[in-house]
Image 1 (cartoon, rainbow, N blue to C red):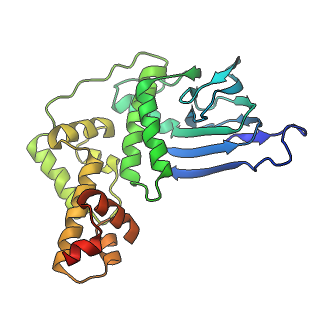
Image 2 (image 1 turned 90 degrees about the vertical axis):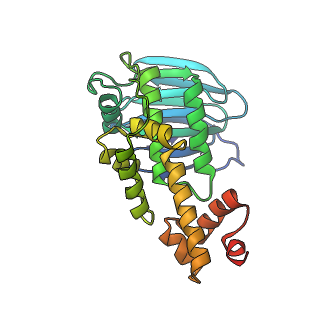
Image 3 (image 1 turned 120 degrees about the horizontal axis):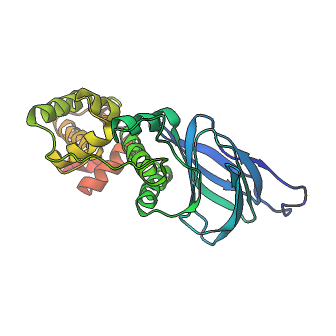
Length: 293
């Protein structure tokens, strides 16, 4: 839910640009908007989602913000964050052009992460309203989210859900109402469990593989599954799936004369250009050039 903007009658110059705010990416676990707005003010209220705002302006931006009965007025630098818990009304006034990344996690999802990943009571562990904060791990995640927004061919739901789980854990650990240390899991997945997951991926490459589905095979939280999978394989579930899709595409390109678009779709890529982009990143050549080599 984006800011509902209101403008004073004399606040915009005659050549001001119109507001731009659209849902860029979204899954069941995360929704992302890139907010670009002219100077103004607005109200925000997401009843069922927690929201992280990340300032992207190149120069410090004056903000006045009100939430949870408190008022904050300051210059926000690039990377400064605002945390607005679910069902917390927020008012914001900004003087320059707004450039902000808005990331939302459903309250039900955060509750599940608190219980399954951190072993906490999801009704007691929630987020605190927080003005102008900086946190290194969250900044790194926000950078990955922004890169995903800016890509013409996004990496897909598996990647976004992985980011959502890491983001949820970091938010709860840094801005939670109670302390939330992360349990330690070492040693990776047992061989039989790893094979179960790899077989599932192999048979489902053409479809939409979700992190929650992979974790559900082993009755694990998605966050811990992702960590243990990487311990076992050396790469993340998302990276492994891309690797397997590219290997299958290489095999089909060499062993058949099927159209490249058909091969792309059968290997789980969204389009010919999506396959070409990933193929070039890994092999240094296009699928067509690989077939001819």
